[in-house]
Amino acid sequence: MAKALAAEGIAVEITPQLQEAIDEEWAWADYPMPWCTRGEVRWVSDQAQKIHDDIQHGRLLIHAHARDGHTTVAVGTYLHQGGKSVYLHGENHLRQVADTFDSLAEAMTAFKRVHASEMRLGPASLTDTERAAIAARSVNVTTSEAGPSHPGHKTVPVYLADPGDHDALLDRFLDKHGEFQKWRTWSDETTHAIHESQTLRIEHVHEADAHETVWTVAAYETPVSDRMWVLTATGATPAPALQVLLTHLADGEGRDTRIDGPVDEQTATAATRPLTEAGWEHSLTTRGLRRISPDGEAGVQFDPLTSQHPQNPATWTIWAGTDPDQPTWAISASPRTPTSLITGLCDALANETVVRQYPLGRERARGLVTPAPTPTVMRPAGRSR
Image 1 (cartoon, rainbow, N blue to C red):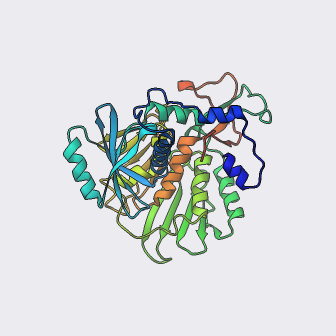
Image 2 (cartoon, rainbow, N blue to C red):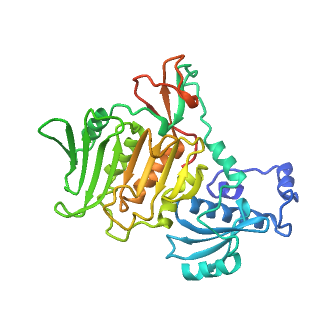
Image 3 (cartoon, one colour):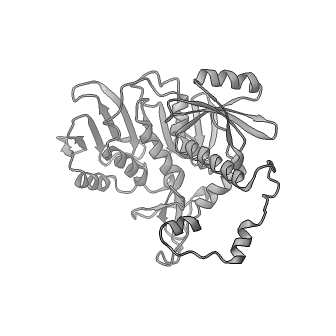
């Protein structure tokens, strides 16, 4: 650091006491590789952090993991390095690439040969250290500007937010994004927002039941072609979740969908990475891959059996409530829905919070409260992006 500052022309003085501390020998307590120098210890930790970041941001897709004695091993593929597959060994600050392979098939064969009895599909559960880091980043810090918390307010995850005013949400979206043109049906019961390319269409039904489909988003390869993908949302879907959806649509995701094979379980695992990082429980059910929030109040499900049918409207299901068959609200999507859009929704559900207002003295079961008719306010959790 001192050399870097000096190179920028900044005068730096290292006192004798500081130099003595710099030169002082030190050791990491209980470090399992005591032969490493200080520089080597830092290098190992830096490489482990890079691997963690690549996994977190979807650049490294983990296909399977296993226990190897006291630690975890895994096999994965770098999606941004020409498909290079790697064998990972260790956890936390000791995770490292132990071997590389030219193909996924070669990597999986080698991994199965050594770890067949312990092998499990998908990434391993978060370690205690990773969970602690997530918890530390998720703490909401109240500043003096925010003022003292009001007894009639409660901070809740996005999936427990109020539905808000869907009509106003659409109106604001159309006012801000002139590339979408508003159309009303003859009965005024439905509003259509159609992109200028004519390949992305949003339909919103007014004054519908909370459990009925009120939002339908559909994308087309050309204005006259068959539908590529479709996404629907019910009337009680929280406004912040819908805002995330509309933001992604406005950014171009949906119109740029490639016509390729349907999504598979590996892609689904990458798309739901924010949930994994936030500690959502992973399970395999008769309906496919499912992730449940730590409080059991929300879930995301991918059904691989329906992913072979491009027009199936419920390959993806996102819901709130303890029973996915009777959800408080639900979003459903067909297999070719852009995975970046699914990831955006998952990231909001896992990491964003809102302030919800409720009448004093009126509490719901499970510790929640009945909301008053006031708009929700987005409050990002205290985490690094």
